[in-house]
Length: 396
Image (cartoon, rainbow, N blue to C red; front, top):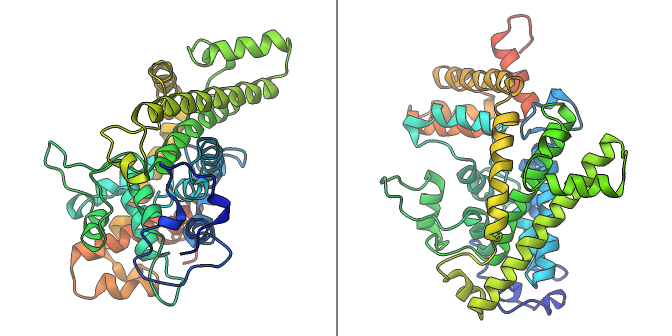
C-alpha cells in the first residue's frame, strides 16, 4: 500500500501502516487515510461505540450526568495514548484505535454487570469483556455488505486482544476465552508475543485515566474528601503543592488541578521509563519489539509502588462503598433476571434475536446469543427491559 506521509517520522519499532499485515477480508484501502486511521474511524462510527455513552464505569447512569461513562473514559484514554505515542515516535492513530475499542465489550453496569453475566455463562464458556470486544469487532457489528464486524487490520485486532499482555497458557489449565480461541484458528494474532508498543501505551493510558477520573468522580460524589486522599503517597505531595501555590483555592478547582497534575506526573514517568527500556533493548522493528521477553512501555518501580495505596484506597472507599454496593447489587439482579428469563423463554427475545436462540435447541448457542444481547445493552435499556418483562404495570 502507499506509505502515509504523515508517518514519515515514525520510530523503527513503531507499527508503520505501510507495513500492515492487512485485513482478514481484502478490500481497497482509502487514498486519503492510512489503514489505521480507517480502523479508528470505523470504531468511532460503530453502534457499539455509540452505546458506550450510556454504559457506566462505577455509577449507574441515573446517578448524575457528571460522572464518567465508558464513552468519556474511552475518549480520555485515547487522548492520553495519542499524546504519549506522538512523543515516543509511535503510530498514534493505531494507539488511538486500540484505546477507543478497548471497552466495547463491556456489559451494562460496569464490572458488576460483567461479574453477573460471567456467573450466568459459567456452564457455557464464561464471559469476559475483552473476548466480547473481539466478538463485536469481528462478528456482531453488521454494517458492511462484504463482511461481518469492522474488518480491522491485524495490528488493531492484535492490539485490542493483547493490550494487557500476551495470552499465555495458564498454569491452572484454563483455556482461552471462546471467541479469541476460535479466531486464533482463523487468523493468528501471535498471542504468545508482546503486543505492539502502541497497544502497550494504550493499556497504561487506561490505567492513568481510570485511577485519576475515579479520584475525581469519588471526590465529587462525596465518597471521600480531599484531606483523605492527601494522605496517599502519590496524591498528597501534589495537593500540598497546589495549595502552597494557590492558598484558599475553591474545592472544584483544587480537585481538577490535583487530578491534572497527577495525570501529568504519571504520563511523564511512563515516557521516561519507556525511553529507558527502548534505549536498553534497541528494537529495530515492531517485530523485534514484540519478541522481547518484557514490555517496553512501563511505569518506573517507584510509580508502581506509589499507585498501590491509591488503588487500595479506591477499592475500599469507592468500589466497595455501601452506596455503590447497593447499586451494584441491584444491577447484578437485573442481569441475572434477564439472562434466566431469556434462557427459559427465548420467545420473549426481540424477533430478530429469536431464530438462532430457539432453533436447534442448543443451550450453549442460546446462552451465547443471550449474552450478546444483554452485553450490548446500555444501563438504561437494561433497566427498561427489566421493567417491561417483570413489572405488570409497564407496557411491553
